Length: 205
Ligand code: GRF
Image (cartoon, rainbow, N blue to C red; front, side, top):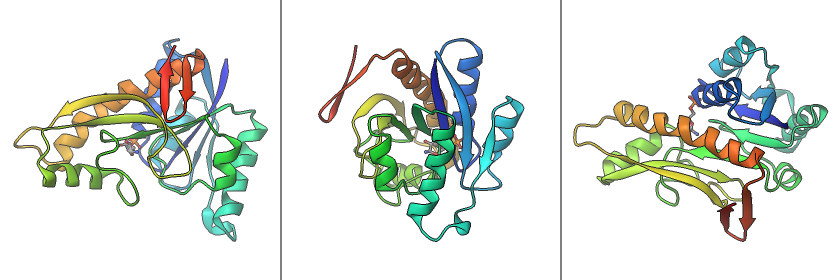
């Protein structure tokens, strides 16, 4: 049974998809803690409703990113977390954090990496750029986190059609539905020990 820690900043619909699949017995893991850098993140409520410890950690209480990250590491270590999931987490992970959890941090991004990703490209902005560029396909990507932004080895991807009359909202909704399938699937594979990182690639055993 893998101990999972989930970092969030927003509504937590991805978190909810993980909670649901664990409750359905599809993932051999358990969420030991949900940590948010935003006090008003609805994901904290979702965690509490599921009986999961939910912590808001106020970055302003720390002198630096490093100190803030050290606090998160402390909370994760206390609960022997073995897999860190970033589910709409909008804050920097320090090098120390990434080093400590290398190969055990999974992120979900709402596009087909390497398109529409990187610094400053998150949330609704991703869908805005997709619509402005006029691509016919977008999608979702689940990847391991490395020192870069959205540059880690890709675990799973799934394409989503862009419709002519799409708005950011309609496209976001369609991509989110895929995210809610892809992220739990990647976590399930990780918990079953079926993800092998080979250089820049991930092989599913
Ligand atoms: C999702 O679109 C995810 O891809 C991105 O942030 C959003 C989080 O949504 N990283 P939610 O908080 O899980 O509903």
